[in-house]
Amino acid sequence: MFRWIARCFEDANGVPDEARVAAFLMVLAFITNSVVSVVMNPAHTFDAQQFGIGAGALAAGVGVWFGQRKDN
Image 1 (cartoon, rainbow, N blue to C red):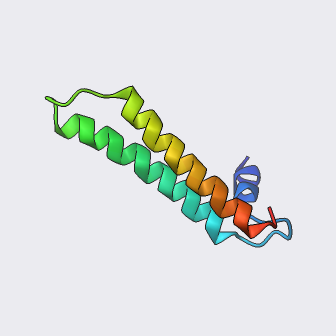
Image 2: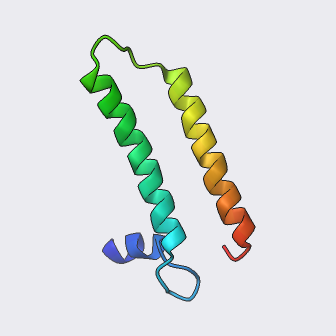
């Protein structure tokens, strides 16, 4: 199982790909910041529409990033 997870962050030649690691960490940070924002500010309710817009923009940015590389 760990080998399968490691392969998610490697390119076709088996070399660790820093772009995939950075994209994963960026998504993880986005979700963590959203959770912390709601937990630390109880008066603020979770707005799924704003979360979806931010997640969509993040996904589009990561997609463009990988699309420009042309080797994935």
